[in-house]
Length: 214
Image (cartoon, rainbow, N blue to C red; front, side):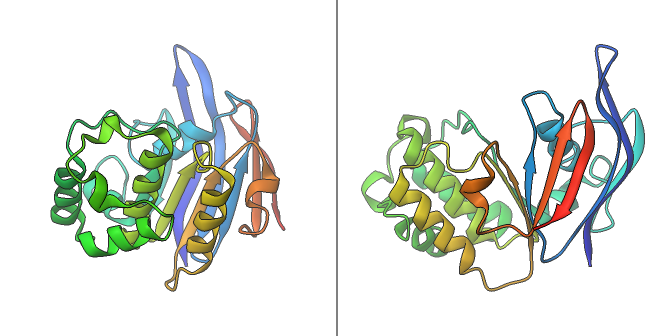
């Protein structure tokens, strides 16, 4: 079953093509390493899937929905972990309450996922999110994403702020997911996610130049 359909997707910034006629499908069960140099269009494509941009050409559908016109429905299907954590000013407690009310992901499940990466949320519950260390922010965002049980998980350099032990814990959590989903790992290092993925997409100059099963 397709979760993402992209056909002839084109996006320009300041007249330059950042996405150039990109066509691909992502099916439930696929775990994808999305690779390519800086400026290749990887993050732009993901943000187009999330509904951040109006396209200059082509179309995208997420589980049949238009990411721009039906963005709320699309965001219900996706968990996105950015490379740089957002400057959230809520306390950890307020953030957990917000996530539970807006997505239905229960606080207890988020805390359980965080504890699996040795993040003691109870100890930091009154701290502002932005005052947590980079690694702690990343662990909490990962815990929220996994607790939501989204149909599509998107990780942009997910292990950038994690130490080796936390990376192994993160990989273990991904391997233990017990529901149907697809994942995209935006990464520069295939070896970091090689054991988790079954497809590799390589982009350059806004095009998909390689797409293969592994």
